[in-house]
Structures are given as C-alpha cells and as structure tokens.
Length: 224
Image (cartoon, rainbow, N blue to C red; front, side):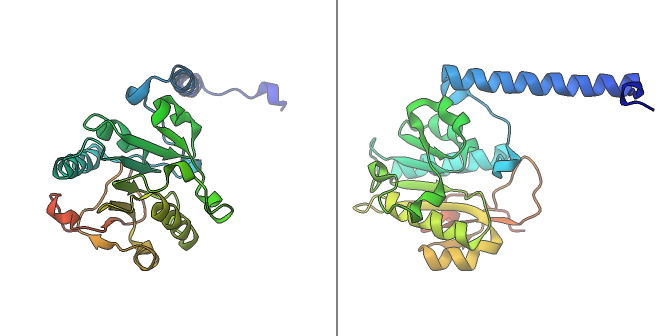
C-alpha cells in the first residue's frame, strides 16, 4: 500500500486538525506578545524542553503574599526583586511591586520589556563578571533552577551571590527538589522550609522550599 493510500478515520483527523490549529494559534499569539511587548499580561505555554513547569495558583498567591510582607517590612520603595527561572511568578509579583527583574534563558519573556534579563547560568564559569550590571542589586531573590543537578546548583549559587545586595539583609527563597538539599545548603546559607511549592502539572520529584530566613513565619504550611 502506498503512503498516499493511508487515511486517518474522520473523527481522528478532526481531533488532530483541531489540536494543530490550537497549537498554531498559541504560537502566533506568543509571537505577537513578544513583538508587541504586552507586559505583565503576556502568558506563555510551558516549554518542557527547557524544563519549564508553571506554579499552581495557590503557590503563586502564597509567594506573592510573602513578597508583600517582605516589602512592607523593608519599608523602602527601592526594594528590588530578582526572579531567576520562575517566570510564572512574574505577574503576581509585578502586580504588588514595581521593581522586579525576571532572569530567563527563554527569550519569549522579552515580552516583559525592560524587566526581562536574558541569562544562561552556564556563563558564570566562563566570566566572573557575568551580569555585572546587576551585581549587588537585589534585596530579594527567588530562584527555581531548571535542573536538579549539583552542577546547576553550583552555577546558580554563584550567580545569586553576585546578584544579592551586600549592604542589606538580602533575602533568598529557593524552590527546588528535595534531592538538591545537601548541595544547596553547602553552597548557600539556606535551610529547608515547610512550604511545598506546587505546579499546575504533577511532577515526579518532591519539591520543597529553602530560605535564608524563617519563611515558615510568612506562609500557611501544610506538612506532607
């Protein structure tokens, strides 16, 4: 039988065509957002090849409320926040505080305009001055590294130590797998907390939070 003679059942073909049409529309919408830089309202699909998994609404709201409390306690409009590889938090944080930078490898997030900072954590080992214009700049860093490996933790930690403001009590919240605890706690002055970040899709790895302050005082925790 020739390939030209192979035909899908009508109902299967209709489902396939609907899927392809929806995907094409999403891609076109995302391209338009990047071109037009539509700001905080821009929404994007997860790119699993880049290990992107968006937080659940509950997690986004919980972390937003933590940030709100920290900003209030700081009492300074210059309080500056860096989001490293956690783009799904951006809108929630931006809604309550203006000074936010989103560090991302994925250039789709250029749609967030001047808040977007393109970065590749692998570059820190090649250039000690990588991201120099952002060194010693952030009062709060929230990070969610894309990979659960020792190498990734080491490189992300180097970047974080460069970015955090040295002359203030800079806060760090780290959301990642439980498996990275021995590496992370050896690299940064953080400890595991009770808050468990959740994602829109169930992931195979157990995710936990780490911080260099008592994050549990700011969250409503559910022990697992």
